[in-house]
Length: 555
Image 1 (cartoon, rainbow, N blue to C red):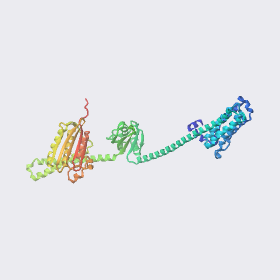
Image 2: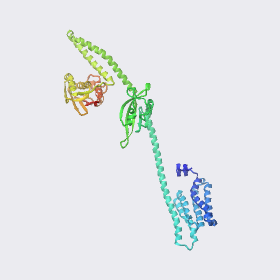
Image 3: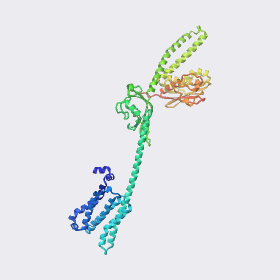
Image 4: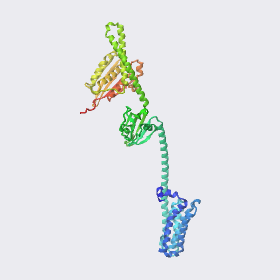
């Protein structure tokens, strides 16, 4: 029972008891003291055994304690058990006056009924009146015994003791009110916390429902990698890997790289990278193996606390298997078709060249038609080469220390005849030498694409200018024209494969929409970037940014 008492707390333990037991516990301290007095009386004060008042007080205390158990308080209304502390004043008065002058200090026992009445919750006025006049009842008989020979000390003692009990009652009353106010505040806070907890659970359910309704897998993790929030899609991903992806470095996980065969090391897994503080997007991994293997595009963003410290991360998984397989099928189709086209086209060009070697034996009209065939066949070969380049998932780049100024000069020289026919002025403002870490063949191809495009999309003449500037780490080359330009929407799509602007279609400008996408592949293959600034009717400017130096050499 003692363990039960300390675990649940005094208040809750007391409320769990029955009314009779509660009343008996309130009376118990005074009863124990009276019982101790009764046991010690034959040995310490045997003369008190002949005092009727003293014996009556002890018997009355015993009767009151038995009444705590025998009276059915639970059936009675208006708290009648408070009659017991009132009768305690009478019993204490009998004890005190029966034991005088041997035990005059027994009057102090009045503090027990005073405490009971003051803490009982009865009306404040009633408890204060009883706390004053109850002790006064105890003191008056001794004062009456000295009448009429009363002294100031007798009167003061008789009045001071009830006053002391009155102040004790007042203090208990104030303390009780304060405790009840605190209990009320705690109860209000408890209700508020329960309400907030209920709302929090409802929001958590709503959040989980929303997460489970999305088409992507979502996982929020703390800095140690422990999952905080996840949805069904993310759990499917974890099941497909055959192990938990929440804690890096634990378990054998079927998470592969882009080749679909090489297992990713623990530090390269999406959640491992996320809890390392990385922020990434479009990180492609393959989950599972065999026919159930799925391509997952992952992204991660850090969770930051209010002070800016790392507090975890959110990782998003998107199933892009269909898209990856469709892209691979498209690349394979383009590659196969390009290969099949190239052989007959080379045969046509070769045979036309052999025929044109004997131009003198042919009529001029036939020569003219053969030149048209040759020109269009060469155009088709160039288009097939472009298709082959775009279908390749990896563009071969062999960078080295290259002078871009000579590449610009060569590109402008090659385009000079085309520019003259289009009435376009070519110019360059490029420092010489202009060193960069680049593949001269590929960057020359990129410059040719940009210059040819600038001329082609300036049908009404104008100017094409190449400028450059360099820093310690980067080299920038700009190709600008004063041609037809593009709208903001078309500029955003300029590097998309097969994209052709509406203005180019209306102007009947030939092209397959592959030149800029190939140029972007070349530049990114060098670790550089390419951007476009354009305005409708205001021309376009393409900026290539390439590394100035290569990786450090090992000695």
